[in-house]
Image (tube, rainbow, N blue to C red):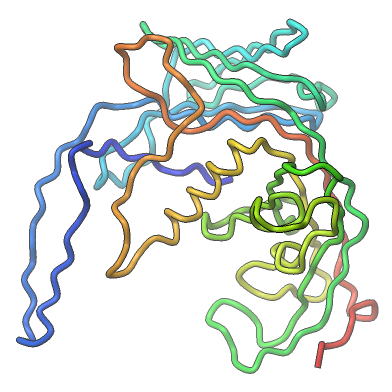
Length: 309
C-alpha cells in the first residue's frame, strides 16, 4: 500500500471554510494562516506470513502544505517479538527509514495464531503496538468476463475484461480481510479510495454474511480503474487483518474520498502505536500482522465468459 501522508495540523483548527458568492458573480480569496504542530512518528508496519524480507517504514509527519517526501526516522531500534518469545530485529542499513528483517527468500516471520508485539525506541521515547496474525480463507478460483462499455472512459479501453475471484469466509462472525488486486505479478493499491476491505463476506458487521462466499462487489473489486486486456496477468491477494486494522483502513478510504463543498475537516487517523512516555508525542500509522493467500491467472479471451447482456 502506498504510504499515507500524515499531517501535523494545529489541533485547534476546526477545518477550512469555502466561500462561494455565486449571486454576485465574484470570488473572494481567503488566505488561511495555519501553524504546524510538532513532528510525530509515523509507523507503516504491515508484517505477514509470506517468506522473504519484511519491512517496517518509519517517517516523520509533515505540515499540511508540505509536498516534499516524508523525512525518514534514522537510528531507531525496531524489534518485533511473538508470544512465544522469539525476537525479530529490524535494521536500517541503508539509512532510508526502511527497517528490514530477513536475509534469504526462505526466512519466515509470521505464523497464524500468534500475537506480535512491535517496540520502537527513538531518542527518549518507546512506542509499542500489538497485533494478532489471524486465519485467511483459501481462494477457490479466478474468472473473468468480456465487457463492452457504452462509452470510452478517460483511463481505460472501450472493451476488455472484468476479473473476479471466488472465496468463502470462515464460519464464525468477526473475520476481517484486505483484498488487493495483483497486476503483472505485483499486488497493487494505487489509490486509497480503491482500498477493498471485508467484514466476513460483506462490507460491514451488520450484514448477515458469516461463512458465505464474498459478495459480488468485493469479488470484482480486483478490477479497479480500468478493464484488463487479453494476455494480461491478473490475480488477487487476501490478507487477514484485525478488526482494528479494518477500522483504520476504512477511515483511510473515507478520508481519501472526502471532498467537495460538504467535506469534513481532515484529521489524523487514530493509531494502535502507543508512546510509553506519557509526556511524549503520540504516534501515527499502524502495526498489523496478516496471513496472505494469493492466486493469479493470465486472461485468455477463449476462456472468458461472454458479456452479461
